[in-house]
Length: 197
Image (cartoon, rainbow, N blue to C red; front, side):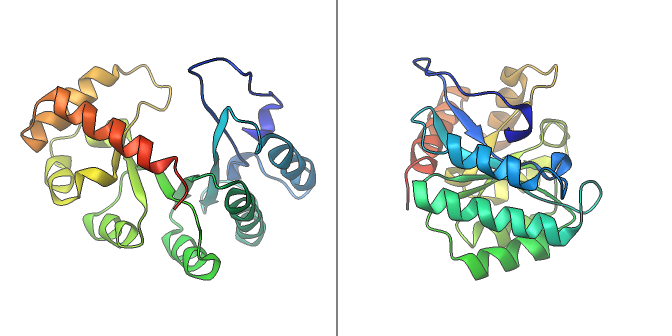
C-alpha cells in the first residue's frame, strides 16, 4: 500500500499490489500517495492496483475518495492492471464510478460480506468477489456462494489468524465439490483476473 512507503522487491514467485486505501488518505497526503502509486505501478512484481475504493465509515470526504479512486483506475488502465477494491457502504458510488470510467481491466471486491443482490449486481458488470473470511465461514453464506458463478470468486484471510485451508474446506463443502477442484477454480480465476481485458 502506498501509505506504507515500502517498495515491492523483485522476488521470484512474489506478487504485490500498490494503491491508496481510503483509511489512510488525507487531503494533505493525497499527492504524495498518488506519486507513490505512479512510481510503483509499472514494476513487474506489482500485478494490481489497490486496495482502492470507498469507505463511508472511515476516511476522508467521499469526494476525495472518489477523486483518488478515479485516479487509480486511470493508472490501472494505463498499465493494464486489475483493481482490488475496498468498499464499505458505498456501492452506489462504486457502481457509478464503474459506469463513468468504463474500466479496461478487471475489478475485484475485497472482503465482501454483503447480500446476494449486491453480489449479482457487481458480477453483472464483470467484477470478481473475494469473500471476507469471517463471513464465508458462517453457515448462512452457503446459499450465497452456491448462487454465484464459481469463475468469479476468490477466498482470503486478509492477514487474520485464520487457516486458509479451513476456508477452502468450508467453501468446497458448500459447493459440493472436492477441495482440489476448488483450488483449480481459484487458480484459473487468478490467471484470468491478472490479464487485461
